[in-house]
Length: 180
Image 1 (cartoon, one colour):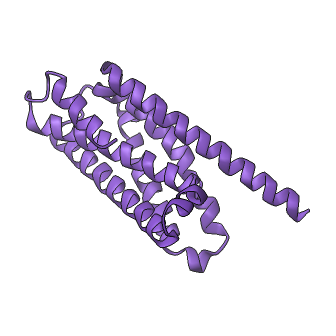
Image 2 (cartoon, one colour; image 1 turned 90 degrees about the vertical axis):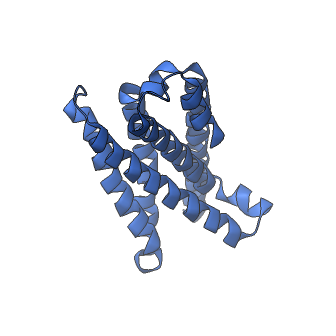
């Protein structure tokens, strides 16, 4: 998964145009890839726990989340260095707004022992953030608009996130019907 964004940008024919522009594109695509992997790992946690130790699955989930967030911050910083002239300002500011919400979700997860039940509901905001990031990427992202391979890959990734959401909703419904 992580090789696809770098390969797509590298093979696009525009990778050597400007190092900052290339870096911000790769950072965005890699961040999004890691965030998708993180959401899918969280959604299908029971499956991953059967494949590996629970602690390992949790650490992998944490590492992909932090790495995805760090790359998203790097993308935002590079976007301001490169310049945002020519982009619709409202759509550009979606990125920093999502980063703030993502930071809140991360801090909430880190404080999950204190927040017991509330953190899970706040953590579920990731599905909404995914949809917003996908829209942001499709509207503003050069590579996601122009590269067929990326469209296919990210379409598959979106389907995996949607399946994870469906899995979680079904599990939540089973739990609530069992408690009544």
